[in-house]
Length: 379
Image (cartoon, rainbow, N blue to C red; front, side, top):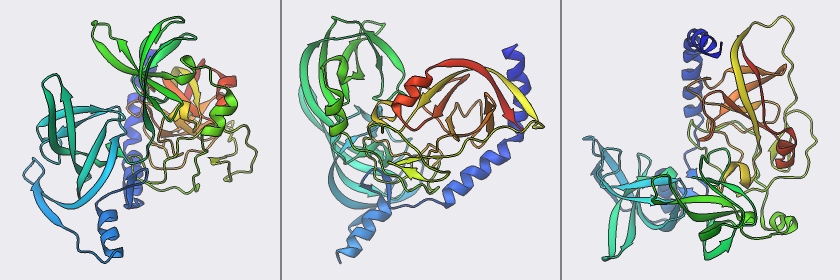
């Protein structure tokens, strides 16, 4: 039955392609190009900084690997990798030769910023043969200059069972392993104290790097975690591109409660009013979906959570849902248990026949839990 629903939906999905393209175009027009990640300057922001300091920027041109010239401006700052992993390439583009693979939290030195969304970095790769200095390019959106990852090596005994994720955030992290209570766990670092980076054994027997909540290894009081964390502040305005929008990315902890009228922002959470589907609405059944919930806290959204969705708009309760955009196009209106939501976000862990509903607090998400229900597309 679900298979038939998926075939029926292909025709509906085609009707939404024009709408999806329009969303992309509008988001691109709304781009504010000062930054592309928390606190980190892109090409235009670096040029403006030179002008403000009455300095002459040092620029050079380089091939992006596809025969196109890009301009780079000198920029010196210490940054770290903010993606699960990324490649350092020989040229500022995807066609550049892969020089090294670096993972979340790896420190590198940025020496230049390109006008095509790439940055030049240097990285000291350590191996049994010694230290090799690598110079190459990474996507600017994959680096960050906020100090979220701290070295915290040690061996611990797991206090409880836990899934191991490949990224420190439930929305984007996918389960790659499991820790069982009393297991011996080797930790490498902490991500703002909330997540711990650990070694784990892959199915092929090789060693991998994953993430579990620090509470699995250390008995941290809830009051301490709340004090250490900060609430993400967002302005509630829709702006950005289809990639992560600019804005100060704060490793936010969930708030205790939210009450507000439609459109207001309380404790950094944009609150919306529930919209019930009308009795005469035309609905297309999509099948039975797994429904989960997420909020703008560190556990759900990871170290650089800023309340901005993958489509660039500010996430809003009673409206925003994270979907698999290959199954449900961005901008689609979806009906879940009689309430209308809008597909505005995605996540690495949000796969086929799964929808993540945005809520105000982590506790609210925990209370609503995980369930399965029929989902409909509002035409």
